[in-house]
Image (cartoon, rainbow, N blue to C red):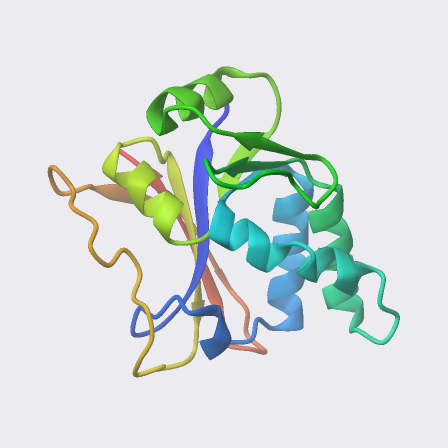
Length: 184
């Protein structure tokens, strides 16, 4: 069975607003490999932030090498968009899923293929509440944002969720840390 992995960047004070932080080049290298080894799952809002942004970056020679490589990995990845309102997908390798969230995710996890990385805030929050996330990959930026949307705001768990640290990766040049936790 494929694992559903929530992947997100946050600041030290828990802000997950992407405008409050800039990933380092070494972090991009780490995430490029993650994206190459996964299928990607988004809600409509996050998908529309990512496409056409990353496919355009992938083709722009004036962007950094890390940005272009991430854009190319993203553009090549299979993308699944959970949306009832999105009429069609702009990006290539993209399919839209419209059914019951819980049932559709269980079906996706049972399909053959790569693990599924889910990004964003709203859709992953719903998946966490449903108990469907198997693993958490959290990039922590060495920043105190002081304001902005916080991770898992408004999430109502039926009980405390105990996680087990599986990996930590420190990027010494930038101060970023990636923590990978497994659901127990």
